[in-house]
Image 1 (cartoon, rainbow, N blue to C red):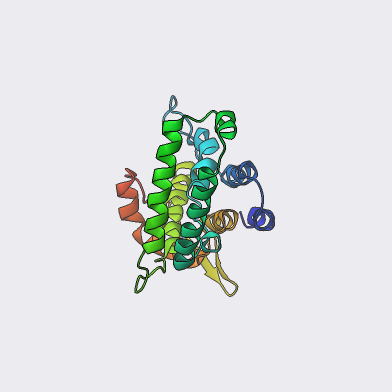
Image 2 (cartoon, helix red, strand yellow):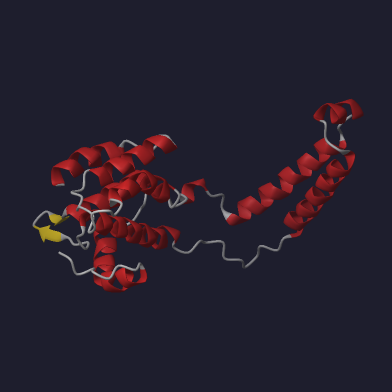
Length: 217
C-alpha cells in the first residue's frame, strides 16, 4: 500500500481542479487497491461490489472551502445591493419582453414581492455584534469522512483501522488510504490526528455501524 500511496498521492494532489467524475474515479481506484477479504458466506455478495458507490458517497461529503464563502457582513451588503438591482430590472421590463419570457404575470408579481421583502430585510439587517465566524466545519467533516473510510476499509479487508510510526512519521495501509482520500477531497486536517482519534474510538464506532467482529486483525 505504501507504493500505491506514492503513486496515488502524487495523482491525488493533482486532482485539485479535476472534474467530479475524475475525483470519483480516483477514489474508487484507491479502494480497489486494497486486499479484499472473501465473503464470509459462499452465497454472500462481495463487499467490493459497493466500491462504485464509495467514491460518490465520499465526494458528497467534501467540505466546502472557506475561500468560496463570502464573509458575513459583505454577503449581507451584497445581497441588499443585488436584490435591489434585480427588482429595478424587473420593474423596467416592457410587456413584449415579459411575453417573450413566457412568465405568468402573477408569478412575476410574486417574485418581485419576495425580492422586495428580501431586499428590505438585507438592507435593514442589524449585523452589529453578530459573530459571522464559522465553527470548525473542516475538522468535524474530516472526522465523518474518516469514519466512512474506516468502515469501508474494514468491510473490504476485514481489518480494523491501525497505523504505525517510524522516524519519518505515521504510515500504514489505513493511514495511507485516509491521507489519499483527504488529498482528493481537499480536506484540510491532520491525517494522523484524525486516524488516532478514530482508532481510539473504533470499538464504539464499529458497534454503532453494526460491526460486531471489529477485533479482527
